[in-house]
Image (cartoon, rainbow, N blue to C red; front, side, top):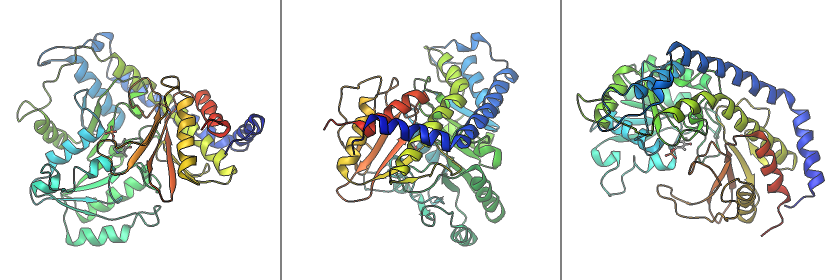
Length: 415
Ligand SMILES: *Cc1c(COP(=O)(O)O)cnc(C)c1O
């Protein structure tokens, strides 16, 4: 589709006017979260000396301890491990599952198949290092029609099985499904605690942070993990991931990640921690920018007749916006529009490629300052020859940029 610029401007301002109150709601959430983050910095008495890094083993690294203290306060957890040594959120999630699950234990996912890169480290393919290869068992329950949690199936499973870990993925991932909200997570966690109190409630919180005013550990999760190049890094953190949770779980995870008895007491980062603190401080605002971006794309594409998930009116649990396009060509064109509107690599053309850890070819449009940081405006899609042709859009660190990019996707005439 290629529309006239004036028509697109009218569409955009029409959507902004018609749905003002949904945009306003996002400002309210951001204000709440900013207050929470500010209070955590103050209660933890963050000082500029905490920005200084360490070298070697990193014993007594005060900046590292301080950023972890601040994360625990914000995420409502007893303990946390916030480390730049995690190469990605997948790394932190898979490593934590390996730490918590022993041979013959069961991992039970209540939100269907986990995110591609995580799932590939669960299912055995005969290569030898997936959880199943170590004797861990796996079971799951899908959402009903991609929308509703299947409480009956979960209850039935938990009555006869006692999984060591109950796994929840908050965000939609590459699925035509809704994100979980904190209210959903509370219901699931209450239910698990009632029927199978020994189970560890484990949340993949990627893309979910600061979207609502509470976080998973506030409502009963035992472990909650996400990426620092997504929401809680506020587009400023250069790398890393966080794990928040009960002291027992976080200790078990760090003794696996580092070594027994050493636990979290080593790990240096000579470059220092300022960007982690500053990114975390900015995260509520940056997440709000990306939420408004999602609302705008949702509203405008829906007005043009496309099926979108979620719709603009819907209460959101993550920053991702899915749009069902009509063909592969439209999908690739959409991604090219996003790429051309980027501040970095705008002259490069995204092509579908076999990205490590994903099952389909994936096209990714991202011209980001931090490599692959999807809190910056980015769009990606698994590429298949058959429908549905769904593009997943997320991020955007200024709403103005998102608006320009949206206009680009609709007015782009280049092939
Ligand atoms: C991005 C994402 C991951 C993986 O994070 P990486 O840092 O890219 O490894 C896992 N789960 C969900 C829901 C995600 O959005």
